[in-house]
Length: 179
Ligand code: A4P
Ligand code: MG
Image (cartoon, rainbow, N blue to C red; front, side, top):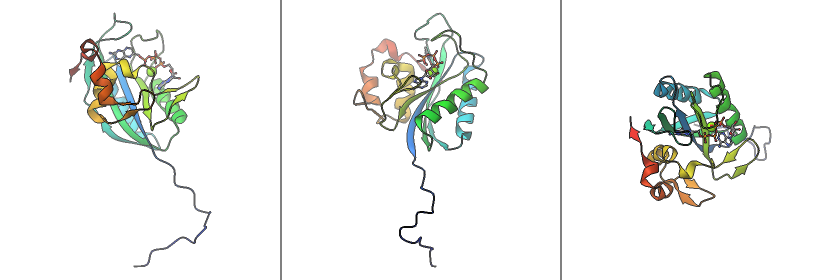
């Protein structure tokens, strides 16, 4: 069977969108947190230009930062996306808003928190967006789920893999119960 071969130098065809690999951290500690994460994952998979390729187990984790609040449920997801990091952030903030998150206290209780942990090997530092997520390397609740799905993912600033970062964490930062 003959295949149609585009003429050399044909510039009429739209360029193929570039696919990027990104990792999303998910957290919730209000109103049935595991159900909130399932709903956030469902919405993530429905985003145009996003394919969810892996989802970690869910982990119950003690609150970090403001400690006088309920335990969290955390997870991580690997995605492939044609969205820029900025547009991905906009889409994640929209999911948070649609799911009814109201921002009150920094590091306080939240219905759903969706963070871009890594986006290719990009290093981004704007008013709106910091990638890699600035706190990820010190947080067991991020690294444990992420190491489950992407132990070899690379932190371009610290120049270490996720499993190396996890191995450096003190035991106290690694407290978590796999659900
Ligand atoms: N922003 C900048 N970089 C990013 C990024 N890489 N991903 C900006 C997502 N957002 C990013 O976020 C505030 C702004 O950060 C966004 O509008 C975006 O422009 P936010 O989620 O409203 O603020 P926040 O969550 O209250 O503060 P922060 O510093 O983002 O908190 P974290 O780091 O998200 O930590 N303990 C446990 N066990 N599990 C948790 O999940 N989460 C937190 C919140 C504290 N303690 C926790 C957990
Ligand atoms: Mg956040």
